[in-house]
Image (cartoon, rainbow, N blue to C red):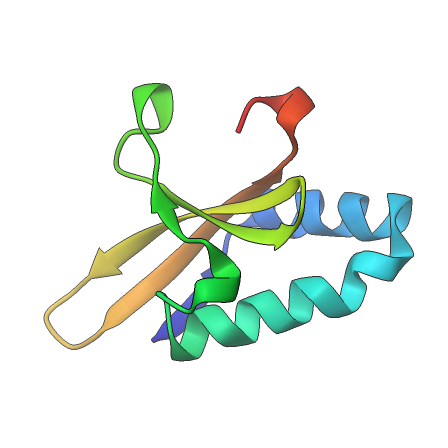
Length: 91
């Protein structure tokens, strides 16, 4: 799948890595896994409900998630990353 990084996601990821530099590799690994296998057990991918209905989330670390949507056009499936979230931000 092709990965699309929204400007909001890029800002959130930079902020996350700046606060927690040790998460850099986890974030990279998560993006690589999502590109290859959306249902990999390590990712704990799940659908979201409520105000984020239609979106999905995957785990970067114990309390950090990536929120994304799957976009299907007539040629290929794409993952559009929206933001990162922690429990305090309401994932």
